[in-house]
Image (tube, rainbow, N blue to C red; front, top):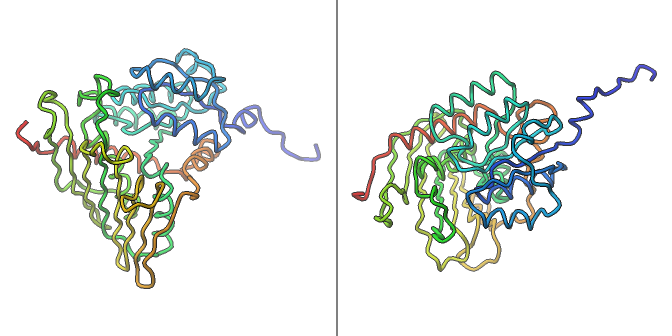
Length: 351
């Protein structure tokens, strides 16, 4: 063909990302599927095993033409590039390791690991297989205002970032919760389970490659009938680039018009950015509200049309064996800091 290179069979197979879902135990699985479909991926099947039947029913209604396939068959299918995982948190690392050993890249919900032993095993498997272990931190990767904030920070709109304050409040919505929801061994503890989002944001917006846990605490203030449960957590972080404070909880009142008033404040040397990710309680409709204040302006930015870059970047990384969506080192550091903060946390509330 006049010297033109003929694509190998493997290259042809990876032109389109083909993905499957194993583990439907959290609603974030919908983010994974929606994002990869928008990035041009092909959704080839899912394992129907779940601890939340209502979630599976919704999944069936949303993707009625996608076949239900036994998870071992999905792992064994050489045409599948990626396995998406939103299983019970304690099971995610094991499923990810199984997928990587079967030659798949992995996109998992947070937390990707719930113990230090799991983290070490994941790192070992990535090193041995060369596969990608990516955690979709939905509060940054799936929030358009958070994507816009990253671009503004990169442009220097608020100078050098010196602190982040991340809030992750949630509604309990007790009738929808499976039994494992109340077992810290199953979900990893409130800091590992929820605050890993804010740890990710601290490292990302401050440009830190590593950090340290200065202090952390957990508590059960509202559910004495579930003594192991944790409904409050906080962490103070520090790096050579800045500091970060995190508060997560299950105390969002029923009167709020969404599941939680997620907020992030990014303080810079020349201004600050505040995100009201899911609701503006002052009355503006919709979500993804960004407020920018610096030396020349004070304005509200509607980020509802901002493109979510993570899924396109992840797809490119699978194709090119690159690390543009997120470095593997970043994923590991978020896991390490979250686990350390959870392990060191002082228990408050007398329970």
